[in-house]
Amino acid sequence: MFDAVKADDLLPSHVLDNLLEGCQVIGFDYRYLYVNGAVARQGRKPREQFAGRIMMDVYPGIEKTAMFEVLQRCMRERNHQQMENQFTFQDGSKAWFELRFVPVPEGVAVLSHEIAKRKQTELEAEIVVGFLRIANECTSTRDLVAKSILFFHDKLDFEAIGIRLQEGDDFPYYETRGFSEDFVLRENSLCQRDARGLIILDSNHHPILDCMCGNVIRGRFDPAKPFFTSEGSFWTNSTTELLAGTTEKDRQSRTRNRCNGEGYESVAVIALRSSEGCIGLLQLNDHRRGQFTPENLALYERLAAHLAVALAKTRAEEAER
Image (cartoon, rainbow, N blue to C red; front, side):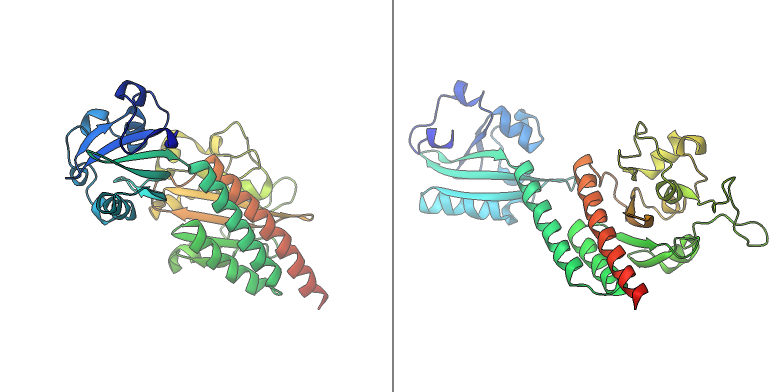
């Protein structure tokens, strides 16, 4: 479709209006002379907000982006340009586009289509390969957990990350990054205790584990509930809405609400399972809402599965030594 648009012969507007690809014509004064419906959808604004307006007024700060630099080069040099661009919208959300810049008598025609799925696939492959490299290099549990925490914090873009590992009847934090010391201290133990500080057992003589962490460890989940995945992970994009819209019966456990009390809205808890059962948890927290999608949760579950395999290996080797 891109090759169908020539520098001196744009398609008629009634044809451009119905293209799936975005098409916009930018004047030499950086004013929008034309945008089709696809550009409006990609830009997340009504089409009427573009007509006759300068780019910098529609998207404040766009003049500081790599896309604007390439547009200027096309204006100046009058030759075709092409790039892949991650655009950050004013609400903080992002999207990937493939862009082609074509000189036209009025200025420059910019042709665009979203490539989010392809970029997501490439990014996921890069993350998985990078983590497997770390997992294969580590020879001790402490080294593996420390490097995993750093890798996840860097690549997954979460404010706080914790890894719990089984220790006797409990699952304390083995290492965290981003959580306050007070939060880790208060949340370290998952076991319910009586007034004497003794662990409370259930009818099967297993320690009762609190909160959603306990649900994930014990495999207490209902995939029909919107806050569980089919693999048994817990997640929410708003702890405030979850607590307001559900009961402890719905959540299937006593909830401490400390994540919400600390202002964490996006929270996910993913089991680290080996052949011996659940050996720990991967926890992802962020004050921002809306940090999870079914797609990125599936990636995090795959990473947790790789981490569990590596942990089982290092712990077995350490036990032998």
